[in-house]
Length: 390
Ligand code: MG
Image (cartoon, rainbow, N blue to C red; front, side, top):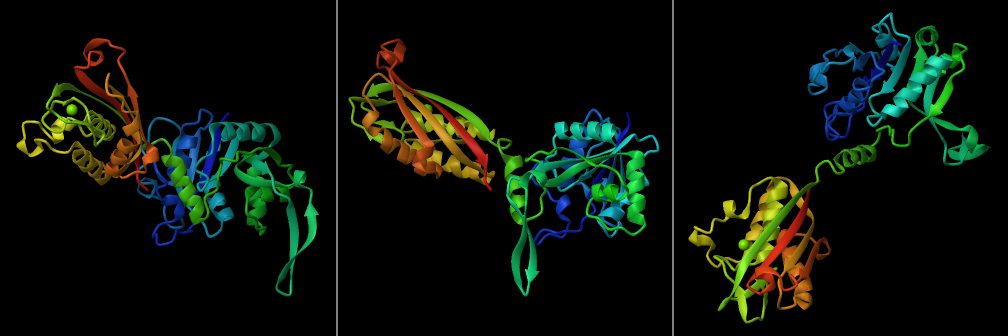
């Protein structure tokens, strides 16, 4: 089976303040057109792709921001027409004569799934014409305008109302007949309507609620959130240990705790701040605390580790990151830190610029085992999530 795909990207709709059509704007991980193109280019049943670009443009590479051409279906570009149906007709002229099935897809639906593509191809091959559509979840009213007012004239049974999506698929000869009807003067907003006018039964395959059409500014922002979900979160871990000795203050998470011993170190030897600093730097891929604040540098002697943490938070913010959340385990035999935990969380949260609810600090003993268990040292483990700032 030879499957050709026409991707309609000829629309001239612009986003506020943008000089390029919407489908050419980056939604994260590429433009809408690139996302759509990738969905078909990587599909095992697709043999060739014809992209319809805005009128007068035929150069695909520069218009898509340079889609690579890995092995796979051939990709052609044609210039579009004034109306969508003119654009599709222009693309159809470029479709291979070998095509058994031709799919038409709007570039403004960048989240089309492989499963939906396959269902549409199968149904088109079997029935001649098939489109993806979703049954209406809302009650549908037919209205008329009467002297400036909108009034209902009919309530349509919801189960008979389907909202058309793309892809829409046709056997080659069915689409040829539909396009001929359009060229004869019939206007339609999709090819299914032209196929109906040409006398074909168009079948419906179950659409996908995730197959959004990006039309409004809100849609655009939702698409950006969707592509960035998870993809730009970064995780890092940190660990620190200091000896406990007499004559030193015990500073944990920026809070000084009254105790007979304190942590030995060049700075205030705050294991929580040091572990969190390393976790944040690790998540950002920016090295570790020793690289940024070497203990050979007198500038950091007795430095407040909370200040170092604040500097690192500023550093990663400069790279476009903010802290999603932090989780810290402090390991020490004595004293109990339970009563100071909320104060520590507040200090650390303030230093990294987030709400205290995003910072967790937990205390743990080592059950008398090893140096920590004997009270000779204190340690901390930290995990940090960083996310891209919007
Ligand atoms: Mg340390």
